[in-house]
Length: 401
Image (cartoon, rainbow, N blue to C red):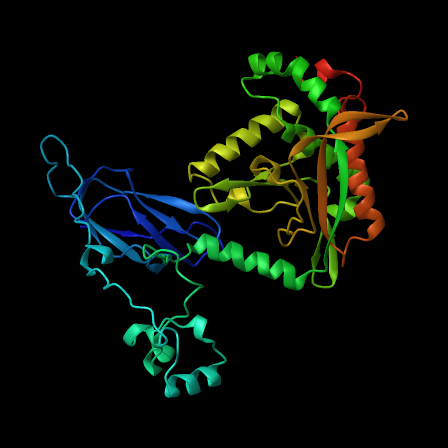
């Protein structure tokens, strides 16, 4: 009998949560078959079977288990069933709706929503009003018991077919929430804004995207332009590529750019390592690889730690403007937004141009106004004239065509 223990997903992680069992108790599993998904405070990872045999589960979904704890047993002496093993079908639990009798038709009268004397006294003590309590007495009268145990009614029900669900947050989601609150409470976060005329990038993409795709098997998107514009701006304003460590400021000479992507388990922030060494092709290939791994739940802890600056693209969801939250311990995050045709003044005349609003949230403890505004202006300059600032005047060489 093989005891399967929780492996360590990372140096600082001591506990994980069983998010989902992918097999049933008593199933026959093959070696290296994924048997469970486990959540840590940094990522969701699959747990592969260490041997073939019949599995006995020792932990329930939602259980928090320590690294090194036994979560299942595998009987390696068990014979493989003929024709393979079909997973056992779980018997669905009866729903509350199926076992609840239909509520009798309610009568509306002077007593509806009126509290009894004892209920009124208790409501005054709790600072509640009659429209916050659902009365269960005759004709809807509010009783003392309703105030004690009843949940406040959220407005007047337009229909009897109303319900709610309660689901425990995953360990990853709880950690993300904790970090976001920490960023708001422990940093002096400010946000500065600017707008970018995307005409030059649109022209380049329309002209070269097909050749780029054909040669490199990856699309020429916006992320490569933004990533390389950020790398250039970080060179010009290195304080934005710094972090606070106690009484010290740590400044990095490399650019590990985190990109916020939405995955099935919530927000993921994989890292593009040494972005300053990558070309347009290299950035696009890495963005595609990391995004696919995040969405498939295959991202590892190492791929999501150690970034020095973050780019978040709320524009893919239609966001026009936002104030992105810093990803601690980083000191800055750039927010991209949707691109909309807007009237702008060019050469003294009004013209229509594709405009994107950009936002830089930064930690004012370490980044001053001059650096923050200058950084965002440098990003704007590079995006509005990428041939000069990002491609050094040679488009085909920069795109490796």
